[in-house]
Amino acid sequence: MPVEDPPVDETRPTGFPSGFGRGSREADALLVLRCLLGITPRTLHDLIWREGSAVASLAAIGGGAAGSDNDRAFVTDATPAGIRECLQAADARFAAPGDQEYWPALLRLEDPPVGVFLRGRRLSLEHRRVAIVGSRRPSTAGVEVARALARGCAAAGLVVTSGGALGIDARAHEGALDAGGSTVAVLGSGIDQEYPATNRRLLREIVARGTLVSEYPPGVPAEPFRFPARNRVIAGLSIGVVIVEGVARSGTRSTADFASQVGIDVFGVPGPITGPLSEAPNALIRDGARLIRGIEDLLHDLGIEAPQSAASPEGLPADQRLALEALAQPMLPDAVARATGLSMPDTLSALVHLELRGLVLGSGGRYRRAFDASPVDADPASAAGATGSGRRPSG
Image (cartoon, rainbow, N blue to C red; front, top):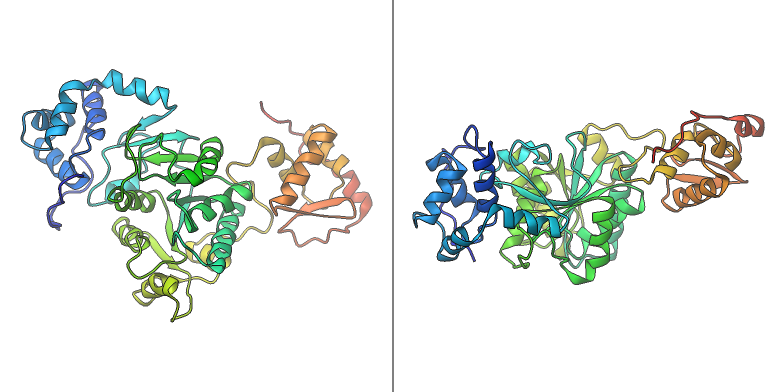
């Protein structure tokens, strides 16, 4: 376990020195620094500012000026090429400050990660992510709220972020995926570790349709002290943090504190004042977090217009996206097939999956977007004759 951090110093610089991690020698040194496990992010951040570069910081650790004995042994034996081979074997990649997949808001943390490891879909600066977190032992109501919020976020084109843990985290990830959206899970273990084991199938689905993120390289086991550090990355990747349920001393409270560091809003789902699982969100609301009753409140407070028609969520398969976009009005499946260029079997499959995701409604053989105000029994002639954009799937 890393040594404890020093007290917070309000005068500490943010971000990293100019040129940090840029150039081949700096990039190699930075990759080795990120693999060290005996030095806390805050201590490493202070060291980097004192030494001025990744190369100098690595030399200081190797010379015994910082870090642990294990860190010095690792610096002696490890090679950047060997680390990259391990990443390739795990189908993982590394993003340093300034890279496209390193979210800029992370630099506003008091102890920003010197880099992150990723698997799955690439993160984009165009993505808007909302964190939904809460208790590992939620109530039935909490589970339903987490799922509903995640589905609503996906329908609005947002990406759901959470911690990949049991309970609210897992239900938030599932809700986003069920709605055809994408999701980001931030791990408290190595980027290749499927932890907890009960979420193995979910984590594999996230790799296929979303993104796994971790500060830790392949092979690092999950340990309790890693999860608070993980929570700051969840906050730094998001435009808002929603606390669904949690006891007073819940780790979800730390996620809210990190959200304040990076300057994003915290939202709380209120609960009974006598309920232990309501302690964290109710306390946050009393301290100034925004109270939300559902997805409409969340989207309003984020300044995101609620969709008047079903959006194309991040992570929706190409055939389903085409079918959803073609539904400008209630349409028969053959009209959807003509509009998209899909075969009739592929069209029917796409519409059935969209209906299961709650993105379209079917009645009388016709389908419409779930958020459209137009009735499903619109004029049959116009519905059958709709042609849409005529686009075909790309690949």
